[in-house]
Length: 150
Image: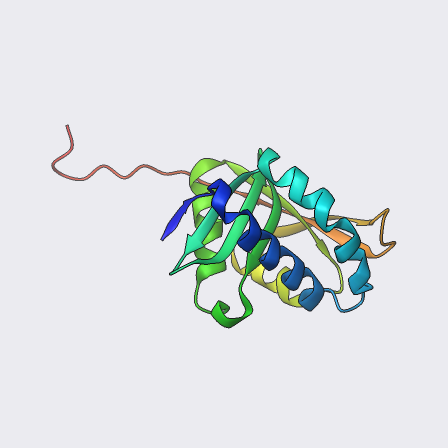
């Protein structure tokens, strides 16, 4: 079940954030994420967060307006459409979404492309000096009215 973040979720969300970053970004010193852990933890409440709760938090998406500030899924629950469901939730709320992904994280780029995102720019991350891509998706909200609608 996808639900809104609750304060009690913070430790689970942060655990997913740390392990997910260290797993996906093997090209960055793992200490970088450890060093930024407390700062990110402090910033979490500034985002709109939705979690996938399957007997505990198994994934989450963080949004700052139409920017996806994070999308993480527990490694034991990947490839079970959790990320797709979290993106669908974000699409319900926004007409356009953007995300920045490290260029070396080809699986994340492929995932976002499968969800309708396109690469719209490239840059260098100022903290890690790693190349990254900006991806965007325009969401077409269509309303279908059935026979019985008034």
